[in-house]
Amino acid sequence: MVFLVAALVILPIIFTTMNAQYLSPGNLDSMMRQASVLLLVVAAGTAPILMGSIDLSVGAIVSLCAVAAALFAQSMGQSAVFWVLPLGLLIGLFNGVIVSYIKLPSFLVTLGTSFVFGGIALLASGGFPVQLVSGSLNAAFHQSLFGIFPMPLVYAVILWLLLIVWLRRTATGRFIYAIGGNERAAKVCGVNVRWVKSLAFGAGGLCCGLAGVLVLFSTTAATPDIGNSFLLPSIAAIVMGGTPLSGGQGGAARGLIGTLILVELTNGMLIIGLPPAAQQIVQGIVVILAVLLTFDRRTAAVVK
Image 1 (cartoon, rainbow, N blue to C red):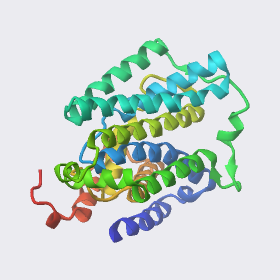
Image 2 (spheres, helix red, strand yellow):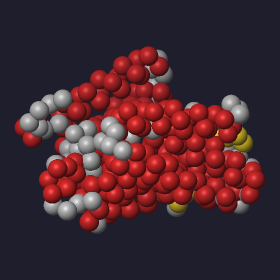
Image 3 (cartoon, rainbow, N blue to C red):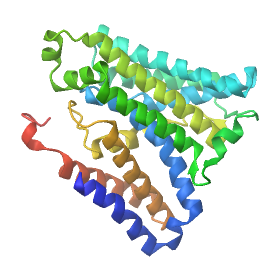
């Protein structure tokens, strides 16, 4: 954790010395807006990973919800975009029911449903961007709190704080940790593992629904693949924050640190003009180093 906090402070210093525009108000606003969507996708993937599962469909759910929100707005007005929140919840529950009740590996299930949801988004959009109609909600997503914090970031942080409270302060949240620590023991202790798993995936779908709305308002158009780019960075942010893929440890609070580090790194490499190929190499090295320094090998009986 000390290493992550140090990286969070040192990265802006390094990039500012290389390009003074890094800490300019415009670039900081851009980073905060970028972080808002990624933070929601990180929140979506956190609960499944805490259980020792994984959701590879979060990017496709974001894409489908963004397309659905744009179509809802065109047919029923801009306020109808929020219908994608229960839609995201139902999609997440669909994943969870297959994983928990049919007892199939979450990796394979969500890999398959990612193609299904992506295909539905492609069919619904016809393969073309779906424009967001203008309306009264534009100001709610393009203004800033106190003239500093973009409203998308404020909404993302609120949902992120609710996720922390849910995971740490409720029985269901503690059950999620228990399942990640030892699923058989949790079942013996009376935990309804199937229901808890379904609920964890459902909560992830809800977060993806809001992420789809934020993406739509930031780009003013939804494409069938608009959320795909968030999948791997979200997993990287979760692991970098200290939540191992084996589950049972970490949580949403640590995911915030991983998210901020990734956003700082990605934006910094872009602003100093690093080639895209070099950016991918650096990101991969940083993720490996972060896991190396945060993963406690003493607590893992077997490293898979």
